[in-house]
Image (cartoon, rainbow, N blue to C red; front, side, top):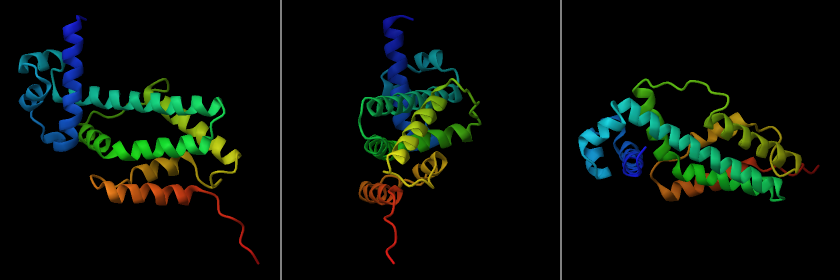
Length: 185
């Protein structure tokens, strides 16, 4: 692909990520093209349908999450605290989750579906996060009755568009995931 075509595609995906997060499936293709700084024909050459475009945004978001999770796991393997890496990753995801949730919701509305791909980005992210949960639990830094499904469920509840509530939410979840001292008799 030519350099300008790669640049145009990237600009379109970035504009779509922003506008879909804001407008959901009501986003207009001409508004996307204008935001990306490309002609509508260029947008349609790269993404013939809105579903194609949303699918690319979801894949890019999932790939970025996988990279962040794998980087955090690499830090754990180099000696960093699994808890601190997991906590930082959770906070990072929760801070950006409202935008991602809008994209995923829109994808579901457009019936893109999410084919399971055991080698794909989602599987890589889940594997890295699961390894960090297990390491944090082995170190005694995280409740042992919590699993990755619980963590993902908690991420799905992150408040949208309210930075103060979201920060409080992250602090409460973080505290709730920590082990409790034994009750004194």
